[in-house]
Length: 230
Image (cartoon, rainbow, N blue to C red; front, side, top):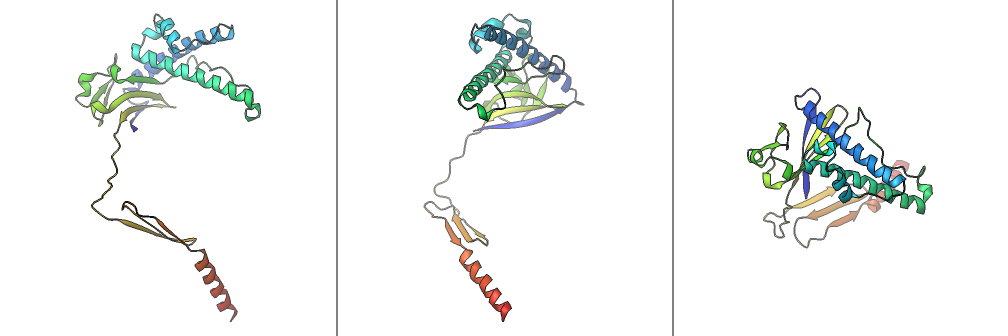
């Protein structure tokens, strides 16, 4: 399964400014690519998918401002947003009453205030520093200490928030197989009202037991009522 180790970078930290600059460059590429796709689509020339856009944008300054692997991830996110738009249009045509209006094309991010996520795959992270337990993003001096083993890391995401950035170290954590023959036998009992007793155990083949407490509760209420009348 995939888990995330998170680091919060506040606006008061030295690393905030370079990360913010990267998110701004990410926004520039997102908007530039979105413009090309929108124009192509609006004028009836069809949709430019990720593979076509990756070829078209290679020579664009916004693409070259970031490592190629990172720019590719930005274009993939944009492609996902367009695919979500197409799915929404299909759903709208089938059941328009579920929508407040026809789905709109993926929007541009604000030219000045807009920021966009960045995803650094393992290929865009310094392997030399990673062996020391430090993540260094390709083309930057940004360093992040991590407790995750190098061979478990999949990618690192820089996620913009209101006045901070969340650095997410995404990694694979192998699931521990369940012990079919646990050394310790454990039973758990939960006492309640409507359910008088709930019983379970870690023993293989054990059938959980649930005892309905409503009849006993009803008898007790009847007894208390009769007692009060006497």
